[in-house]
Length: 331
Image 1: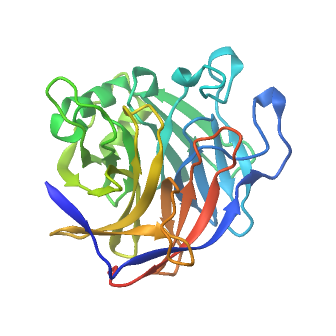
Image 2: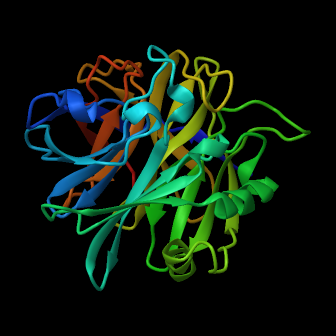
């Protein structure tokens, strides 16, 4: 178990906020509002940010300079719906896409988004090929066998598996599960990571009925600490140069599928060895915010700036893209 601590020498300060909206008006027949809601993970796709939403069947391609997005429509769910929440009473049917990354291949960039796995219905993987084309190729892959293998690795899944981050490495996909669940069957919730061999994963996604299921390896567990008595749990990760950063939120959730009050978020550093260090997200005056950070990417060409996406857990409120300055010994 690797442990994290607050390092007063580190700061993570919000420099700007941009409300995320689609370039076009709301589209009722597609069940799409005018704003991007429930932003849950970020990845670079060329000069745009690919953003997935845990409560909505759309991928947003965001211009980070303006916050305006092009929408890529994913297949509809039950009753033709593409938005899911407690108000509509259909939250149990959502894909719950909580993590995404970009995979570079011979045919170009592919966005890969993963369901959290916290419920049986949330064990699907979405791929978007030719994502910048006028008509991207969208696939929704039933991946129950892969999620069962992940859940079977108790040292990764813990009691209530909730995959919140995915990071593409040269030969592997690293997954981050969040410890915001409940104890079950003698297991406790875990913040943990594991790696899936990327060639094996891509072969499985191309033919899930026949290809071997990749096995989790290089499993590591983390104690991320707490904010105001609420435990911190992974929400995403990114590479900034050679530095592995993570985001984590402190939320009073009863289990891995329930939203709760958020006391704040941190950005942290995972060194090759030794203890993790983190800093709370603050405003320009140094006051800690109560924002729930769900995704993070580095600004190209920098080592001290990142973008994060904030989810308000409110279907009527747009997600926000924030530019954050990192100061201190982050590297």
